[in-house]
Amino acid sequence: MQAPLLQRRYQILQPLSQGGFGKTFLAADTQRPNHPHCVVKQLQIQPSSPGVTLANSVVEKAKQLFDQEAALLEKLGNHPQVPRLLAYFEENHHFYLVQELITGHPLSKEIIPTLKLRETEVIQVLQDTLEVLAFVHKQQVIHRDIKPDNLMRRQEDGKIVLIDFGAVKEIRNLSATSGTALQTMAIGTRGYMPNEQAAGKPHLSSDIYALGIIAIQALTGLNPDPRTGGLPQDKTTGEIAWRPLAKVSDNLANFIDQMVLQDYRQRYADAGAALQDILALSNSSVPSTALSGKGAAGTHSVVKPNQSTMMSRIKLSRSDKLGLVTVMVTVVGVIVAFTVPEVRGFIGLEGVKDVLYQDNGIMLKYPGDWQVQQIHPPLGGDRAVFQAPRQQPSDYQETITLTIIDLPQPLTHQEYYQQKLRPQLESEYNLNLVNTAADTTLDNRAANMVIYSTTKNGIPIKHQAIWTVKNSRVYQLTYSGEAANFPTDQQTVIKKLQDSFKIPK
Image 1 (cartoon, rainbow, N blue to C red):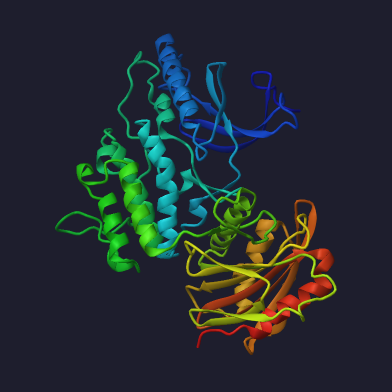
Image 2 (image 1 turned 30 degrees about the vertical axis):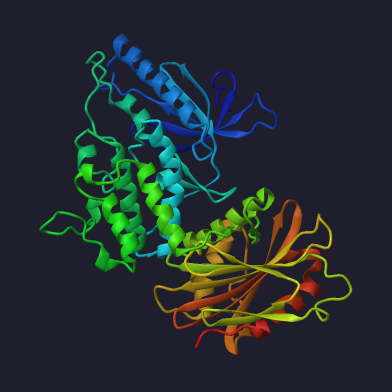
């Protein structure tokens, strides 16, 4: 039996989480076409003890705070990287916020213990987060709970979305017996919360500190939670002594150090100031000609600046690479996407002159009618995209992806499949893959191959992944193309790249 509708409109489907301030549910909006899903947050005032009746003054104060926070979220929701507030209401002494559902995964799936991300990946995370945080700070709002769980990588475009503003949690601090008194309690998460915030006096720079901790966590693989040991401190200055534990340039290390200074007055005053410096650092280290990410069906694509129709694919491609990091648990990757057209006609590839691609010791040949574009900033290393011309505007553009992954411990190519690739693909696409991948070769080395199917916009897509391992590094080619062309055109394209591919000595 279904639960009654909230506000005669929102049908609760399932619980998502529960915390000290209330519960979060997945719900359906029954008054909109197709009943789209949304997030309903139920905020609760906890009585001082079971059975105690809440004073009217407490309820009134909670309503005042709730209205203020709803207005704030309405204002912040004007930014595309903040979930939109769809509704708010009170029902049976419970307060409800209805927000846009963000489909994706939190950065806690990317930033995990023992895994060290590359500098370019961390720069991109800092830049994406500071862009939205600068907007929040411009409204004179302190988030107060910046941590990987509250930074969502949106599946649609790979952008970071800022969720779960700590300010709404002030409602839980109301005492059931103290009238309108508001207890002074720290809102935040241990390990990411600076001293002044722990003392109940946060500043805009407190958010900067938390984001800096995330950067250190990503670069060192350490968990900042003091219950697990936390981050090491300099005994003389009291500052975080993290540099020897990371492979990082002085420029980025200096930037992060300023973010996490113990004295909040010496940090960047707000996200806008920090954003200026990270943009300058990013521009000086990596050109910004394109971005890449992961498609919903596992396909890879590329976009040039201002190409809105391809932007979602690009960002999704980046999420694919980061999705690899997520499910492969201990992997740092470099993904390079190669695109070929859906329809090669009757000519095939024989009439197209090959072009040699070389980068950092990697060599391969690709059809000369492809367009090559270097992707920046590289996620975990260099990345390039090769895109063939479409025969028809509606053609599905196939891709070949080159992935180079540094493994934290030695694995054979079969172990890589069993422990990393297969679990990732089965989890992400609900696949049922064979236990043992087929044998093949790559650069005259023993390799494995697996074929799997997905769907993209209703089109059946087939993928063939070929990989080998050398010196604790995975080299992988993955073809993704329309299933109807797979037995003929795909075999020619993947064979060309497979036969010509050379691994650095």
